[in-house]
Image (cartoon, rainbow, N blue to C red; front, side, top):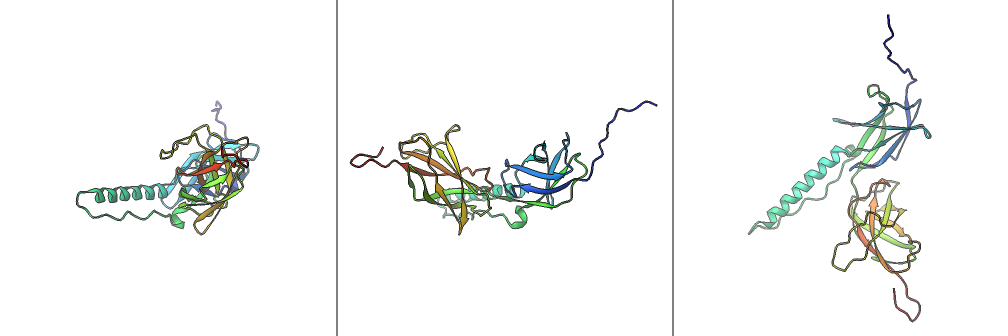
Length: 258
């Protein structure tokens, strides 16, 4: 008889003991870490997100330093389906209102995920066949949309409390606000977020549907400028919309603002 040359790996049962973060953007893309006992590097290492009829399996990488599996979170189908239905209904309302002689049609209310739709169980496998059964949960939330902020200006030195309002604001315990320095633009034109612009991220809190944050100072900047203000529910993935904050340089006594 000749050996087949097949190598088997026998290992102790895996057990997921922690995951971070526990809140993820429903649009996907955030980095999720699963710390587990008896975990090791495997070409078939993968993570499964499952709830009811929804089941998504994604490849993962092994981080030896932390003995954890690292995976890029998926977009969550219950949320994407809800948003697609909302956009379709909103477009239909606009089209109906635009028809000649038609009465205005009330647009649909913004969608909201139920607790059941937000929830997913995360499990781990080193071979894509046998899975952990630790039932660790994550929460998928809609990306927050910033529509306004108060006050609309801040001193260039920062340290100014701001209140953000918009849609899909919830307290997740890991809210972050990103301030991105915008290129100069004329009033009345829509600013564009430069891909290589300086940006700062600050922790924030949410209460009564509004987010509170303190505007930071951009080091080395002395002239007035504008910054885009975005919000992230999971501390990693920022919603596509933003409000504009104007940083104003205070003039020396008897002088003018820069």
